[in-house]
Image 1: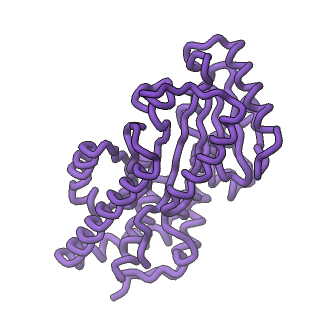
Image 2 (image 1 turned 90 degrees about the vertical axis):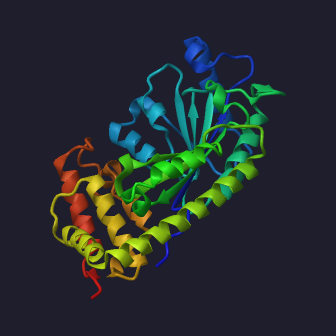
Length: 339
């Protein structure tokens, strides 16, 4: 088993309507007009897939958290409460659109694996279709104008998710983040840094072509992952017994625990994945999906929606941790450390 260089890809495209103030400074009536115009456009002809428009006031906290966990809604938008907000999902969760969040429009997409080029093709296509209806705020010098000046330009923010537990364990992530900052890229932990899961993204939407930015992110990620793999081999070579012990303990907890928090689950899956990639572990239950895919479906709202049939409207219910442990026991049944 060899994990992909990029375990997940996400992207956002930010746009604003020309002639209107940004949402934080616009009149409520004008924001309502923007939402109505967008919803009407989404219901119009010319789309390959249908847009599902959601009433934000009718969505439960769990449903909103579920959209956030799936990468279809930003946390900032989920926590917002300003007038005129709207939200729509394209096709079968292929993309989404936030209306009147920080900006008038924000297209979002998420995919497992290294799919940044595919996401760009899709979001760029949807953006072109929207631009036939709306006049975007654009400046010849600064590009697409946004509420956050540093995002002006292409308006694109691309995210590549990486699994880097060894670099984190050896304290090398800080140096890596500093190197990336000099290249205009950011490295931040995902899920509080559990399991060594991090995201690499472009910090600014400068004037370079979007494919060039995606190429840069891809090249950088390949280099970082090669460092990660080298450090993993070094740790096992220098501490073979300790490495097997830590991985074995992770398997034991995953196989026997009856209550499991999400961060702990991510850490256990991370340890087991490293063991599999280094040839130290047999885990038939993990062969059917990627480690990141398993981590994703163990998020709180995913547990409630996918495994509990909405029996609770609280992602902090104790039963969520119990159900997560049950899923892990099934996945890791039969897993073992090789002698």
